[in-house]
Length: 84
Image (cartoon, rainbow, N blue to C red):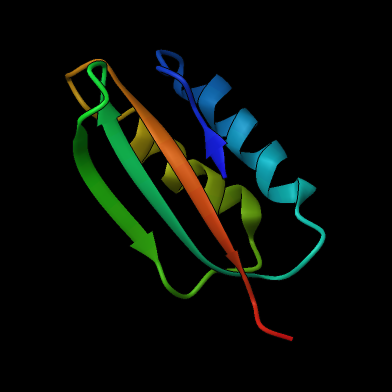
């Protein structure tokens, strides 16, 4: 699990998410991102059930979602590992 904080810079958010995804030592099965308001309320959820091997593109999509609201939001990124 990773918290993005309140991203204002899309590129910095993308870089942080990419670093987090590359840090995983196992194959990623799915990703869920929960975007939260500044008050900690759930604002939106997005899931990637089939995860690509291209972690840079995935990081870009996640960052766009995490930082893509007019509200001041943060996000929790949940990564599930593939069963062995």
